[in-house]
Amino acid sequence: MKKKMIAALLTTAMLLTGLTGCGGASDGGAQTAQTEDGESGTETAAAAEPGENFNETGYPIVNEPITLKVLLGIRDVDSLTPTEEMPALVRLEEKTGIHIEWEIIKGADWETKLNLMFASGEYPDIILSCNTTVDDEEYGVTQQILIPLEDAIAKYMPTYMERVNAEDSDPTTGLIASDGHTYSVGYLVGQNINTNAHYFINQTWMDNLGLETPTTLEELTDVLRAFKTQDPNGNGEADEVPLEMQLDGGAYYGVRYMLPMFGIPCDHQKWIYLDDNKKVQFAATQEGFRECMEWLNLCYREGLIDPEVISQDVNTVETKLKEGNVGFFAAWRLLAMGFDDGVAKDCTLYMPAGPEGRKASMLRYIEMAKPESGAFLTMTNEHVAESLRWLDALLETETMFSLYYGEQDAGDEKMGWEYDAENGKINALADGSVEVKNCLDCNTLFFAPGKYISETFNMPPQRIEKTDYCTKYDEAGIIQKYSNDYLKLAPLTAEQLQQISLKETDIKNAVEENMAAFITQGVTDESWDAFMKLFEGMDVESYLKVYQDAVDQMDIR
Image (cartoon, rainbow, N blue to C red; front, side, top):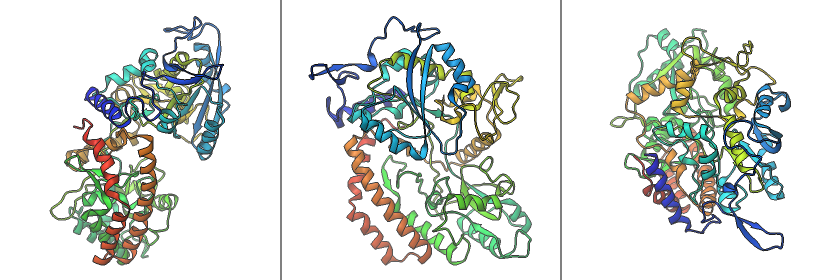
């Protein structure tokens, strides 16, 4: 499958951009550069031959030390010890002969500082953007600040390529840009899962009230009514929240994660999805969308849903889940979500049932590296081969896990990892509670597709929990047939993506504004017709056609 999909993507890219369009090079990664006399010339940066100081195999990577500059984006919540004090990085420098000058930027400042850096013309050698983002279309295809890497990766990154080739389908397919080139080394933390959000219902409350698990939408509504009126927590107060969510937020608590119960597998990024015939559909104009809004309005009118659904944010929802006084909600999983002592101890997985005559359709999730995250090399990097071999060294199993979790056999209950004496796989010891970490944590380059991670790593309880949920949903036949992730693979040009981005902002604003009105005020034929006409005015049809044309040329099975 992977070879066919890559071929289809490359063919589509050529059709969309032409052999020399969109600023992409037509010679397999050529970069346009200025010679000393001011005339433009061409040089293939990614294919440049390294000098005699370089060792293509073994260690050190270089005979005489060199220095590379690395720009690293980290999460806002992370605090790290100085990189020169991180044991794994110290060992890595001794092993490779490559010294790293790190510049570390918090996520909140990332976009501003990255754009300023790109505008300045002074670039680092490597950009590590594992929990931040880099636009490969803009800075690779169009501006050519980032360099194509596919040929050099194949030559200088054997560890990475071994993991790619071991999978049934290529987990790096999504890294191919609209010009057919790959500008990044992938970041992927595999879990062997196939969907994102799951539904959870308060089993303790049902047991207290003698209720059976609902199997239809009508039965679910009646259970929520019982949660509202029959004091399931037994405190003598009408303080229960039967249905908890927010309007449209992250962490899978938003209204859009109720839509799969009505046959609409919408993801958290776009209001489009692929149906069972590989047709791109607009979620907001589907009858199931209206049915969902009508149901949520019924819940709102009867006090079955949190009255703050329209105004509250993710943090507020999570606080309420921690308090545990909730009957029904959608989330990624129960364990290790911050509410282990709250709803997690009382709730169980719920198998959704769609409206009469139609089944639920949960979003199908494909584990693949995303083009905006990972490692990128810039056009001023004079040590491409050395850089890629250094990145490959980051991915060697013991180094990679030490940079992610902390030291091996550190004897620290809060950090580190160990080999399991029984099965030889890796056990993570880190619990995430260390305030200042002596490793890069999840900000490091990490590439662990499904087969590799399952053969190498003992999944922690929360990941096993998630995999079990996915298996149950899959066995029930309620997982979407064709993943929306294919829409993210669509080889669109930078110009198309820019136009789409503007339109998607307008669509998002219109959908959210009307969702709020539908939930609180109800849906009438008149209000629904006005809603439909909004999207006619936005020319949503042409927006869908751009994606449909790309999907039609992809090898989706």
